[in-house]
Length: 323
Image (cartoon, rainbow, N blue to C red; front, side):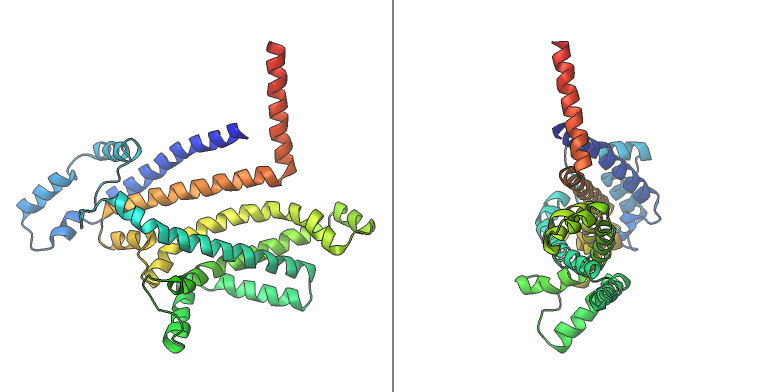
């Protein structure tokens, strides 16, 4: 298991570098001149040329790419903003806790609500509980996150005046953003949990457990649920990545100064260093999420456990033979 984790951690290096090369290439070839945006339309050609030289924008593509990769992966320096001249690393560190808080709470809501909802629908298949759960899931999947966020503001802030419409502060400022960010995940998790549970409860070992006289609670919790969690875990990983991606929209709707809001503002201002840094940062987070999902698979799925134990035993036998 340790070797597997180390192998996956090493894979983060080429993945992150690949993302860095792709996003740098996109920002390099995208239309628009950041210097013109910084200085405005009244700047003279001499001033524009001087700023381009100061920012290193006159260098060829390969030189700028090499300098960018060196700064990011060797010096761990994302540079400074073209507009504010503030360190991007410090700015992201100050904004990161808000993005993580929204993502973590949204994921907890997704798991705590979505999985029981799907299991309930599976156990009451074609009955009223199943139909209500799937109707809720259908609406959750169909509603765009930004539209739901705006409707929450209209209902709970404008009409009822229960919650603040935007900004940061106490816990009340994060209720609507987390709700808006979690609804689609809850719906997707409920659908997956229902599908997985329906497949499991028709399996032979579940039928055998019922024939032995075990209680329905014991059959579900000890036999059906552990095997149903395998595909649910895979969906949970993708949902967590989607939640962090959805924070880009949610933070802008509720004016929360997080990483997503930081990136969208930079895109509008053509502040390319910020855009590239945020994309690389989100790619690294996604890679770590998928690593955690793979580790969870190893503990949940007995076949993967047996595979690792078999490799471990084989290595032991080889060492003994060499001795």
